[in-house]
Image: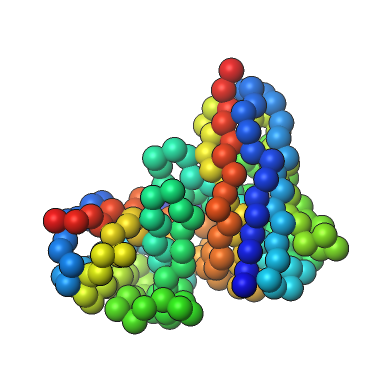
Length: 107
Length: 121
């Protein structure tokens, strides 16, 4: 199975900050990497697919990059509604696996 | 607008069975693969199973293989998950998820709100 490792597991940031979350795969997954946002009590929401493609309706302050084993999710200017938990997920081969999550909270 | 509404969750004893349903609307259900993804309380996300658009191909996580069965009725726009031999570690919110293609590939595009399954005596 492909293991997905996110870092950090949590971070504190202020509105307006630039935030970067990293995700590492245990083997190359090309660009088959997706990012999700989950708020408390809600279902996850797709933000980025295929490593860098922005899902329809997602604000442009979210961006993704990387290929192979190392990937990054960047929020260019953190907004109040962005405080949430973020997950990466590989869709390269089954079993489809998720990272452990990064919780972004208010500093 | 894509809508996915799960039902069928509840409290069940270890070793028991439960069938989850997911009613879809807002898209051509028969054209897309569908998945179940679960989340144990205060834990991360775990893919459970995927079925191709026509139902001919199914995939399972090792943790549920042989105990869970995914199926679909395209005439009713409904996805199912039959869960047998349930264990305490199956306790989770189960989300129905639309995929962007007819097969296994691609992200988990749209998510239902989930239904809670609790396995406890």
